[in-house]
Length: 325
Ligand code: CO
Ligand code: CO
Image (cartoon, rainbow, N blue to C red; front, top):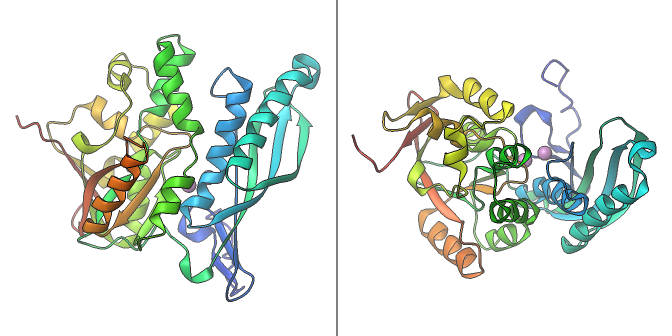
């Protein structure tokens, strides 16, 4: 939408499309703003009920990433009803229904069209206090960076399509994608994060780049602290890399300095295009330690501090590892 004129002559638009944030935000009163977002895609897993859950968790995530509470959702359906029949579609819708219910929100309608390839997603509306929004800019030198879900999701799901993934791995990646960012967001409200976003299509480094750019800082990440799904490296070494991941890697070249110990495979994994990823948070170090500890005690073993925010220097992102040559 960069080619379109800015719509900011409405003072109630608190977040528009100019800042590449997770969702649009409109102020209704001094106490209430609505957060609006939409996301849909083609099936990424074979199980239709699971696909519905993942699509919903993914769409709801942008509301959580803005510090909001999801309230209502609308289904968006493209589906070849004559070819596949109503049963599969009903399972997709049931998955989304259950996930939206788990979020404490309600589906109040939707729209469907006949489509050769199934597509599903939701438009979600959430509430937030206008003064308590989380944005993807505002990261400050001295902060650390926290990630609440593992990466490698794009590579593993591509591996599923090529029959290269065990059932255990498949169950793990599916349950991670279907996990709401609700708990991570609720606990985060007890702290004052400087910047928050979620990791999706642009990958960990793509979304980190947007945070660094918007905040005018440099972000330093240590790959050995980044939670990565088991088996990701093996698949990536075999060349199982989604197209979106390669595109991210190429797009990000100019903005990142990779220490020489990082292989191309390492770089690609960090750029992996993800569905329904975790929250990426810039926050005070002491608070981050406490927050990660709380999430881990609540059963999220993946939540980690993965790097730190520093004054802006030549590159937006610096990636290192513990392994020295
Ligand atoms: Co997002
Ligand atoms: Co989105």
